[in-house]
Length: 245
Image (tube, rainbow, N blue to C red):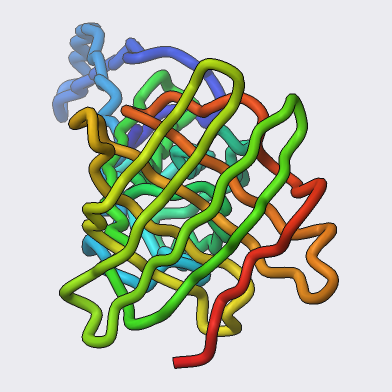
């Protein structure tokens, strides 16, 4: 807020203005008034949208502007996946940077907000799209907690067409899929995800981790229409294989 004292925490400030005029015959005239300076909120640019293979480290570099010269600013980055926000002090002349590793499937929206100390605030968002890659992920005779079990094989040779199948059972839940829509694996081939359509028409997304042999620390998680399914996570039997291309 230009001309305002820093840290006053108000959306506007009123200042007394006094004018004294004296002529060459020692005549003096006085007048007074008040001037209100209203705060202007900062403006944030979160950066361009990004398309990345799943498993990539996501980095952003945001910027902000503010005509106020005496304000103080803070920033907040919401990664959109329920993890703790990244916060800190900001300056209009400096970049707001951060990086994040996602461990759940699906596209994400990152929101960056900058607040000044005079109640001004502005936010901007950047969309992160995780694209398909080439790759092959398989697993058989999987066992999970709460009696969950299943298996799958998913493959894409060109990063566009995806083929495979999925079977998942847990108590009265029996899920099958023969239509796959996307697959992606991390560059080090330790993490991956795939999505598709179940035989009953619902949409599923699966996230996996291949943590090496014998597979007891491998991970399989499944969401159906955005709802996490019971009885999956760290394996109690079987293993996940993310194959070399």
